[in-house]
Amino acid sequence: MCVLAPCEAALVSNGVGIVVIFRSGAPLLRPQFSPFVGSRRTLRYLALVCIAVSLPQLSVAQSAGAAEPLSLDQALRVAQERSHALLAQDAAQESAREMAVAAGQLPDPTLRLGIQNLPVSGPDAGSLTRDFMTMRSIGVMQEITRPEKRRARAARFIREADAAQAVRVTQLSNLRRDAAVAWLDRHFQDRLLGALRTQRSEAVLQVEAADAAYRAGRGSQADTFAARAAVSILEDRIRQAEIQVATATTNLERWVGDDARRPLGAPPSLKTVVLDAPALETRIAHHPEIVALAARETVVQAEADLARANQRADWSVELMYSQRGSAYSNMISIGVSVPLQWDQKNRQDRELASRLSMVEQLRAERDELTRQLLSQARGWQQTWRGNLDRIDHYERSLLPLAAERTRAALAAYRGAAGALASVLEARRNEIELRLEGLRLEMQTAALWAQLEYLIPADYATAAVGDPAKIQEK
Image (cartoon, rainbow, N blue to C red; front, side, top):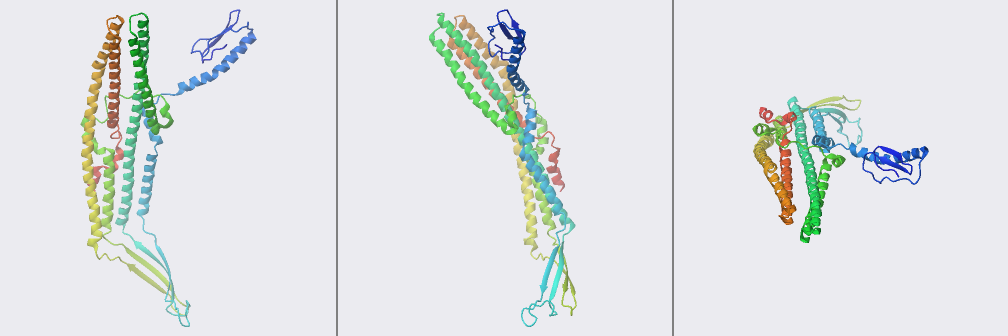
């Protein structure tokens, strides 16, 4: 019988039967002797059969090896490529830019057709030519919008495009942060599960040792039950950890799709962040939310400029050609329309004052948001640095001491100088400390992601809403 494994094979005849031997790989079936002596043709036939049967296993192994680890940078890139929110903001920018071109043009002229002084009674009723006052008119009216007002209208939509760009920067920053948090959560959930499985393997060995000690008369049956109970508890925690890994994978799948099923690469270092403490106060003005609010401020400022331009009315000019009967002269009419802003202080002036008040409102909100985000970021930095010190304390002191306690209790138990309960308690304490250390790393990683992706590394695009530009206005 051939061994089903993707590895090198050899057919050996010992004069009694034929043995198919694979030199590497885990066999799926044990090698057996065939009940006949093989000829060369038989050997070739069996070799072909073994190769054919092994090909599916080989392809499966190759496909499993082809799944490269998903690094954090790759996850962020995939998440950005899959985002439809960014596409929506790109469309919003394009829409505003197109409207800016349209708003900068003169209004379309108005074509006017009409019949004036048409008789409705008497002998000339309904006639278009017999009465000298009846005229058939065609005219064109054009509103003359001043260039500065058209520029103000276009500027308003240009600022809308800038605001959409600022919102895109905000969404991109949030996307990178959330995708990084999901990736890190999956990474640490995998580590938690691996740690529990390792502890379970050691606990199983402890069960075997307790059983052997009981059979040898050196231990009690209560010790064996205690050891088995410890394994059962670990198995329950493993099932819980598997659920958490599945949940973390689902959360990551929201950002990277099917790539969430791939194994993860090495995590980044949590000891350094792009946004360090000295640069925080200077760079907080480039926080995406502040940039978006500043961009919205420029939109309202453009609306205020347009309201100021509306304080001067636009004129309309009309040219009309009127045709009468053949016995009468045709006529041309020229007209000018001027809106009368007779209550400007309660209309145009009030509108301008409203826009200027909105500018002040957004400026105050931006200042308040800056203080809030600065305080929040400082709190994250303090907690992050404190957690790094705690992690270092875990690695240098707590975990080594717990491991030494477990080894000491185990050595005492093996030397019949200690009880199994002490070993199990020491191991349980070590497990809890290791899991608590991993949870602490998980919390620190979430804070790291908040700080690392708080402000885009390349925030040149955020200059559209830079506060300095607003002040220049």
